[in-house]
Length: 196
Ligand SMILES: Cc1cc2nc3c(=O)[nH]c(=O)nc-3n(C[C@H](O)[C@H](O)[C@H](O)COP(=O)(O)O)c2cc1C
Image (cartoon, rainbow, N blue to C red; front, side):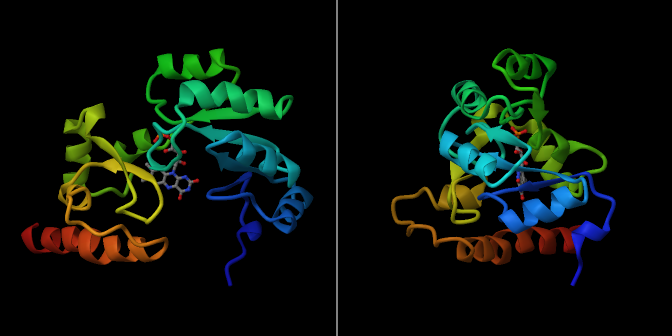
């Protein structure tokens, strides 16, 4: 089994819940900082209770799994809930002005995700990168069709199909994710492999 603690890492960030106390203790014993994503104050308080060093407050604007509270509302609430521990603001930060907004609302910095998907270093395939560059903010949708949990992603034929009246409810996680991977993502990769 691979033990991440054997690598020279500086930070562990937990998503979809608080890290177990045992992980927090192991991380701290090695001088590694530990944090977790929070979409609501109650998540942030739980993260602090288990010993996280700081919290990442992710507003609904964030790509990936996200709640329904906007960054503008969520960031200061989480700052107030966990003070004096630091908060990073996530969700919709792609420009300096948005970073300035996070700082103005009491965050110590920002945590970005979507912006990295379009970089040279990103493993996203060029065809999807092109779609991301061409997309406007109105092309991002909050859907359960990709993983079974509320997730913000770029609208596509797959997400649209799950919005139609005749569509069934998405499965729970992790089953819907397996469906998306086999019926959506893998097909895209397969078509690409044939054409390019
Ligand atoms: C494609 C994608 C996958 C993500 N996967 C994870 C993940 O596995 N774990 C996690 O903590 N956050 C994940 N995130 C969320 C990011 O860590 C980050 O909080 C979020 O992207 C910040 O908002 P932004 O996309 O507006 O910059 C993901 C984001 C994207 C866009």
